Each structure stands twice: as C-alpha cells, then as structure tokens.
Image (cartoon, rainbow, N blue to C red; front, side):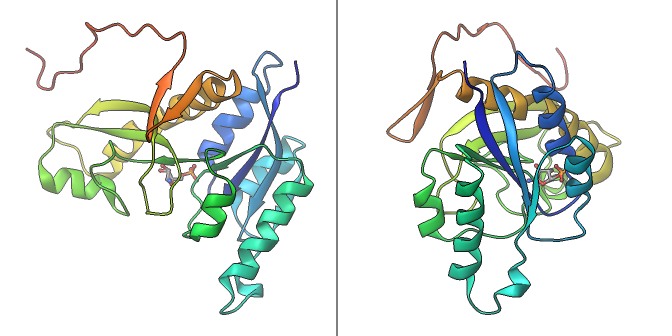
Length: 218
Ligand code: GRF
C-alpha cells in the first residue's frame, strides 16, 4: 500500500522531525516524509533531513515582508508540488492564517509540549512548574485557526518531580513527544483516526482503563 506523504514544517533543532525520520525508516511504517520545509535557512532540522536523503525547501517569511498571505501561499504551493498529504508542524514557529489552516483541514497536525488545553502558547514547562501541577505532558492535535486548539489525537503524561527545573521537565516531556508524534502519524496513516464534532475517535483501539499515572504514587 502507498505510504502517506508527509510534509514536516520546522524552524529549529528538529528533534521531533528526527523521531519521524527514524519511524519512517522502517518500511512497515505507513507514512514517508516527502518534504521538510523550513522558514529558516539555518534550521538544524534541514540538516537532519538532508542527512536522511529527504527533499528540503526553504520558504523564508523574510522574503515576503508584510505579506503573510504570500508567504503562506508559497509554502502551500511547495507542499502541494511535493504531493504532501499530511502536514506535520514540528517546532514551526510561525502562526498560520485561517485560510492556510482551512486549506489543510484535518490534514495538518501539531505537537505541543503540554497537556492541552492547559498551557497553550510558549514557556509551557516553566508555567507548569509555576502552577504546581504534578502531571505534565505533550499533545498531538489537529490544527485549527486558534493557537494550540484542535481535536486531540494522542497525549502522553509525565510526572513533575520535586527537584525539576524547566529543563529537566522539558527533557522528560520531549522523550515522550518523540514517541507520540510517530504514533499519531501512524494512526492517521492507517486511516484509524476520525474527527466528528471536533473530537477524535481511534478505530480499533482498546485502551487499558486501568492505566494511570499518579504522582505522588500511592
Ligand atoms: C517541541 O517541544 C514541540 O513540542 C514544540 O516545539 C518544540 C520543537 O522541538 N512545538 P524540536 O524542534 O522538534 O526539537
């Protein structure tokens, strides 16, 4: 069966991109990366892609001063030319306009370093520490025009430890990001993810209802 063609959008280090590259290296993985697109020519993610022999493109927002629509139209055209079927935001640091988000409705996913809908936006780990939550995590979700909003596909939770700072907590969450992003993409590529009334159901999924993360452990 044909593998789902991914376009991965990065602005920086690209560790989530790397997790997707590694997953797709397995021929049994039902998706492949057709294109890695960055708005920054010096994004380390582009080097990761090149090393893996994956096609890359740079569409810089600086080439479209004051014209966000033209910047996004150039990205849209580049993705479509590459035959991309699912766009994965992986540390892509530009907010996308409603027209772009609508053009890729249910074909555009993001990974966010918190258990949404808590801690939308930036500095999620420090804000989780400041709020004193005992459980934190990450979310893969479909993108809607409001930032960090959209049907949730997969979440992973981690404990917050007494001596955590934002870096140790970020590392613990990031390790889970690298598991859940390939998982979410696999479920989508297998055609098992349905969105109805802005909620996701996963076909053929029998969750273990006894699984719980309790912190502190009882
Ligand atoms: C990750 O924490 C991701 O959740 C957020 O941006 C960061 C990107 O990291 N959206 P990387 O570039 O994938 O290493």
